[in-house]
Image (cartoon, rainbow, N blue to C red; front, top):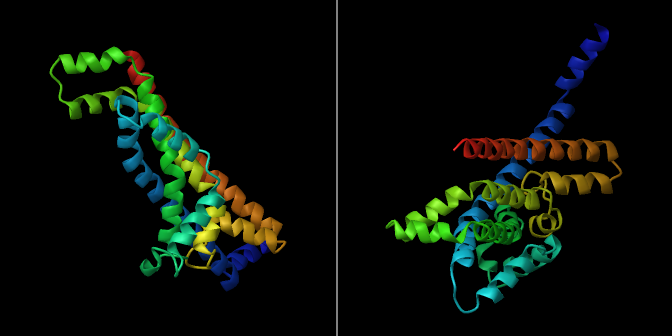
Length: 237
C-alpha cells in the first residue's frame, strides 16, 4: 500500500505531470505532421502515379526516373533544400514558414510523395492490360475507368500508403533542419529522441523510441487489417 501511495504521489507530482503532458503534445504533433504529409502525398501521388502508369507521352521515362530517384532521397538533403527555400533570404522566406510545423509537413511531403507516386504506378502497371480495354469497350468514361482500376489495385495502393507514412514518421534529418526541434512548437518524437540521446538521457530516449515504435505498429496494423480484409473479400468474389 505504501508503494502504491508513493506511486500515486509520483504520478501527481507537477514535474512528472509536466513531462507527461510534454510527451503527449510531442506525440500528437508527430501524428498530425506525418499524417497530414502522408495525406497530401496521397492526393498528389495517386493521380500522378496513375498518369505515369496509364499514360504514354514524351518524357514519361525521364519522369519515372525522377520519381524513382526521389523514392531514395536522403531526408537530410530534403531538409537542406527546403530550409534554403524557406530561409529568410530564400525565395519563400516571406512566408515565414521556417521552424514551424508547416515546414516539417512540406519536407515530409517531399519525402513521401515520390514513394506513394512510384508505388501507385507499379501497382497499376501490374494489372491486366486487357482490363482497361474492357472497361473502355463497355462504355466507361475515363474517370470511371480510373476509379475501377484503383478499386482493383486497392490492396497494393494501401501498401503504398503504409510505405509513405513509414518513410516520414521515422525520419529525423529533415524535421530537425526545417523545424529546429523547438520545445512546444516543432519538437516531434524523432527529434526528441535525438535530443535526449545527446543529453545522455538514454532511458528517456528509449522510452520515446518505444512509443514511436508502438504508434507506428498500431497504425500500420490498422492499415494492414483493412488491406487483408479487402484481400479476403476479393478472394470470395
